Image 1 (tube, rainbow, N blue to C red):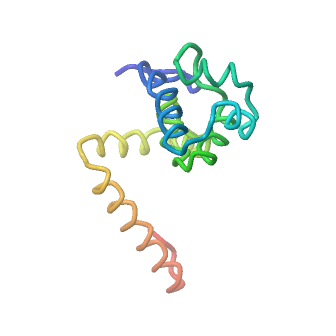
Image 2: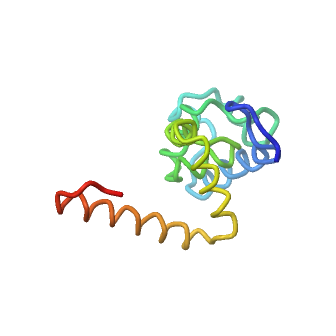
Image 3: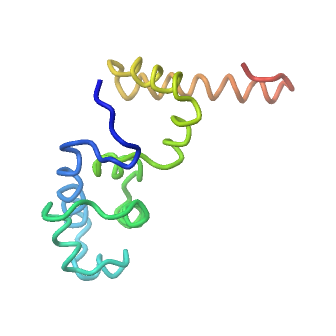
Length: 135
């Protein structure tokens, strides 16, 4: 098992960030300069990001880009090889159980993972509405 520092990006993932941004921006027919202005970036820097000449920007900028392009921020962060700070907080708060859970999901499809999560959320909500402590 390879251990990465908390702030590290996953090797190879950053190579999908720029092309993802560029493809969606073009799909929405938004010009580079107009988009750069919308998300508070220099057009030259945005162009370099889209062409993988520089690493993905900070998480805050990634969130602005995701919002502007109507992309799930978690998906775009993953394309940058990172995870959201709230997700990392959960991992750090539960350093044994969350990695175990994540590794257990490795062979599941996205739909199966969502069904598992939704089932747990529904049970939790039912317990709260019944005035019981969730398990």
